[in-house]
Each structure stands twice: as C-alpha cells, then as structure tokens.
Image (cartoon, rainbow, N blue to C red; front, side):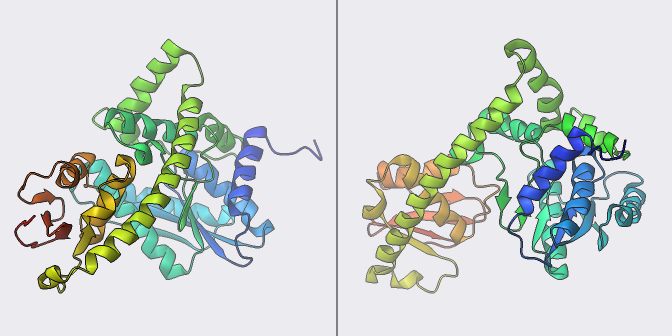
Length: 347
C-alpha cells in the first residue's frame, strides 16, 4: 500500500546505521566491509540507503581470502551488486592468509590489514563492519573460556578508530529478516558451519545449549555484560595510561641505564612507580610496556604479563622473562627493561 514504511527489520537496520553515522562530516566516504552473508549484506543495503540521505558517499569492500573454490567469483558478484545498492566505489581485495595464531586469527589479521589499506587509499572516513549482538555474545563466551581479563570480556566496541559496528544491538534474526525484506539473497559461508572452528562450536552448540538450559535472552545478557565490562576497562585503561607515562618518565631518567638508551624500541619503567598500584592497573602498565617494546598484542597473553608482574611483586633475582616478539624483560637498578637484547638483571 502507498505510504507504508519498510518492514520492521529493515527499519531497525537502517536506524542502527543512521545512528552510527551521525556526526560524520558531510561529503565523507564510508565503506561497508561485505562478505555477502546476511549480516554484512543487510548492513551494505542499509548504508546505501541511509548515507546519501545523510549527505555522505557510500562504497563497498569485499575481501577474498582465497580459502575456498569460487571465492573470486563471489567477490566479483558482490562488486557487481554494489551499484544496485547505491554503493560506489566497490572493490574486491584479494589477500594471502598466513598461519600465525591459527586459521581464524590469520584470516582476521589479513582482512583488517586489507580493509585499512583500502580505506586509506580511498580516503574513507569510516569502515562499517557487520558484527551483531550474537557475535558479541560469542566473543564474551570465548573470553570467559580463555580466562581473559576485563578488556577481553568487553567484547567488540561499537567504534574503534576507523571501524564502526552499527549492528551490535541487533541479532542475526533481524539481519536475515532485513535481507528478506529487501529481496536480497545472502551467501552462507561453509566455514560458518565447520565445527573445526572454535567460534562455530560456540555458535552452533554452546549458545543454543545455554538458551535451552537457562532460557531465552542469553545472547542479550552476554552483550550487556560486554557493555559493563567495557566501562570498567576504559576507566582502568585511563588510570594505567597515566601511571605508564609517569613510570616511563622516571625510568628514563636513570643514568645507570645509559647503555640501553640507543636500543630501538626499548622501554624502561621505574619499579617504584608501579609496585604499589592495584594489580589490575599495574598489569595494564606492564602489558603496554611490552607492546610498546615490540611484543604483538594478539599473542601477548595474560600468562606472559603475570610472569613479568613477578619481577615487580615477587623479585628474587630472577633471570629475564621472555614475551612474544623476541622481547626480553629484566629487572635492573630498580627498573624493568623491555627490549630485544636487555642487559643482565642487577637488583
């Protein structure tokens, strides 16, 4: 009938995109990362509708991981579909997936690197990702299973630098219904049903079992947990940032450490500035120091940080602690030295 609005699911997705893009400078280009699945396809169509009405340009990026037969054909199909969704430019970017950290982590690393490069090249103000509330719930459960800290339990932020996740408040049922309401046919990635992947087992076995045993609403509750944990983590990170700056300033002023001043990327912390901090803050300081010295964030685990923490809280003349990235940590002259070739420990 004339005057009828879009189906409720379509309206919900468009509203989420509109809120996410609010405040974006007029005339800016925003890009949707689209795999062809229901979540990202609904997001792409909604962005193509909302962006022009907000005075923005919208385009599409699809990443071909080259992990399945026909992946290049699917990528080309999405590029061809883009103009009908009012998305221009549209590009398919092919990547080579490595092996570091396992197949899921390696594919994610390659994907984000490609998206960031394309966004910079095209001058985009933002890249929109199709993660939903269900993805958030899975992320929280994975963090719980790994014994991760508050930051990991905070899940995925709605905004992180260049990246926006407009759909974190919506479930997969909504995105599937939105695609149906817009006459779109999503592609179902076979990897999303492959039980060899941990996230797939969480999605297809663990979450349904929790819903059966505890009742409906588990995914929503886990997503709320992520929001609460993010507030706490943000506050602790702010405190840790100030403490880190003070510890580095005091550590850098120690003349006894002049022999490592030229070590590329070396970080020196004054132990006296961190020893009395609450453990949640102190370990954040130590983690940041390791990362600043060159340890990859994705492989620097809580167990590594705990080993470094013992150099502060349980000092018994220990030898150097190794963390990922070839970084060694030693305690020397009342400081912690994070470097690739730190000197021998001296108390």
